[in-house]
Length: 171
Image 1 (cartoon, rainbow, N blue to C red):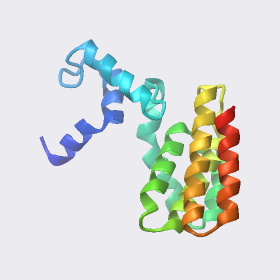
Image 2 (tube, one colour; image 1 turned 30 degrees about the horizontal axis):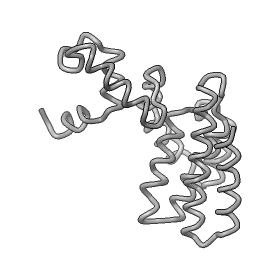
Image 3 (cartoon, rainbow, N blue to C red; image 1 turned 135 degrees about the vertical axis):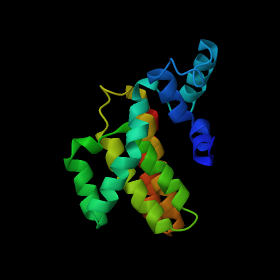
Image 4 (cartoon, rainbow, N blue to C red; image 1 turned 180 degrees about the vertical axis):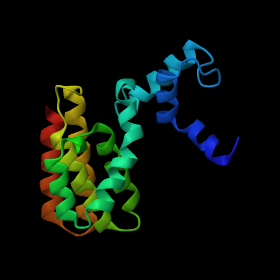
């Protein structure tokens, strides 16, 4: 097993997708109880639903496409709004994770990723995803954005973002 293979084996999203779409794989699906246990914990973490596992796997390619094809932040925002392929649960989670990672090195980059995450979150279809989950991810996106704004000393923007987060958390 290579280092990359072992990293993939420890990735719970890839493992969950493999368990659901390749249940005959002897390594991944040793018994049904381990699959149930993994599903339970993934459900507890960021509202993972195995039905949406392919979205988690597609997200990096969508993010790459967005970052490569659109150089300016405003163009990326517009592209997300206009192209429904980017109204995607996995992409939203990925953007928010990138924002949280970037905060240590660049609050501006963190804010940019959080703004993209907000646009995606606001375009998620509550009829396709669970209604409460869409509100939770919207609240999370606004909180991450508020933190990035706070780090940039943008107090009013941070407070406005927190207000939006509270609105979505109450729904």
